[in-house]
Amino acid sequence: MPERVSVLAPFRHETFRLLWIATLASNLGGLVQAVGAGWMMTTLTDSHNMVALVQASTTLPIMVFSIAAGALADNFDRRIVMIIAQSAMAIISVVLAVLGFLGLMTPWLLLGFTFLIGCGTALFNPSWQASMGDIVPRDDLPGAVTLNAMGFNMMRSVGPAVGGIIVAFAGAAAAFAVNAVSYLPLIAALFRWQPQAIANKLPRERFGSAMWAGVRYASLSPNLMTVMLRGFLFGLAAIAVLALLPSVASEYLGGGALGYGALLGCFGVGAIGGAFLNGRVRERYSNEIIVRIACVVFAVSCVGLGFSREIVLSCLILLPAGAGWVLALSLFNVSVQLSTPRWVVGRALSLYQTATFGGMALGSWLWGSVADLSAPSWSLALAGVTLLACALVGLKLPLPQFSSRDLSPLNAFNEPVLKLEMRPRSGPVMVMVDYQIVQEDIPAFLRLMSERRRIRIRDGARQWALLRDLERPEIWVESYHVPTWVDYVRHNLRRTKADAENLQSLRALHRGEGPPHVHRMIERQTVPQVDDMPLRESPEH
Image 1 (cartoon, rainbow, N blue to C red):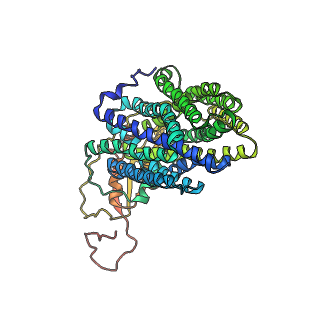
Image 2: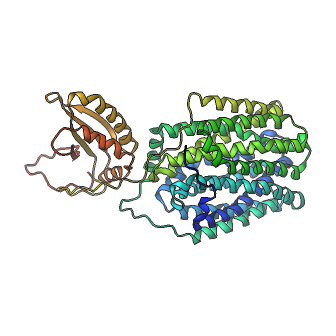
Image 3: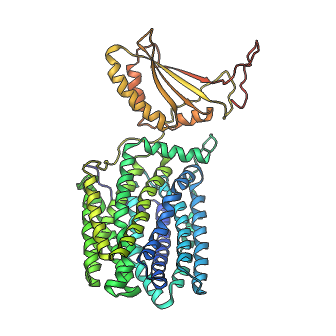
């Protein structure tokens, strides 16, 4: 049973405390803006699909641009990236408010501006979430993620009500103006935060290579792939509630903007309750059981909301839905962070967000279309059935428990002294490692090499192969390529303390004198017709 850590423990850290408080204002403004946008769309069009697309327009950019944002988060100063994202969203919100006040808004123009705000969110989120591991220690990370979710849902419990009041008495444009102002406290807090700079002697990864490195790492990490699939399925089905809530409020409950805000507020109150229950639930149940419970509870809420015609009953139905929402999504997020080393955590989180928010964007369109063809009630019922299917997927692909492996850098690599002068872009480089293995150890050696292959390719190796000497069968050679010398150095610096277990086991099987011998060779594509080969390598190699 895991040791219980208070969900409030991250508040001991001043930086986290200040940034968390600043995000409350930003989240409040974002939720006020969401109410304004959702309600304005109901006044501009009668289409359920267009109303649902307001939700999709904010989640679609996260699906499309998160991978690029994750590469930025891992290769640039995360604080600067977050300041740029928040500043851009503030400017967009100002323009949106001006157009609203002037009465120039159209349905597609509204979707366009909410899409741009979603782009800012896509840029901000990977850097923000990856920074949690820089702000609090590993033991406090689950609490930090839960507190972030709780902070958002605290604002969700009051923000929609505030948004409903603003929209009812001052119009949707005023809600957009409030959102523009709400970014300022977080921008100020980010300027105040001065994170410790991490020395890195290597040049920054090229943008395309950095994105591909993140995709490669995730594709070779079974735990991450499972979390992303479950996040996609949950987002696909659960978003039906938020996407169709404006239509439910206006058609079935007759609550107007204030009623819509009250419904969202109850969803947020339930999410706060789920955040406080998070620690106790994780202490008693496995991750998979928690996700199944969240899916079933949310499914029941979907069906109940679809067929309720009383606003008080609907508010009560949304309480457990909010709890299930935060329990599932915070657990997915923490699973990704604890399964990923720091060098690639921004990209792993961005891929998780691409999967989850991609499901939400697709679900917003899907359930809106179903509502147009039938009714919002039947669309919500079908979403509930899909959530039950998401729970059943866990029988085949259960969510992993939080990893206890130490993914901090091993920092045991010392760049070798070479007799050829190598530039950072010299290459391609071929590496060969010689092992001497006795016959009875071969099965264990091959099992370890299978894991070794995954680690090598995950960290950037190419053309990995395992060779056996035909004349001396006890000699085995591991070989792989890297494009340049700097890629070879980066490949070795990515090794974690958990990876060292594999290397130590391989060395224990090695029967040669001294450790396994490593050959580092640079390839030549042409052989010059000269008697004396130059000792110095040219830069293009």
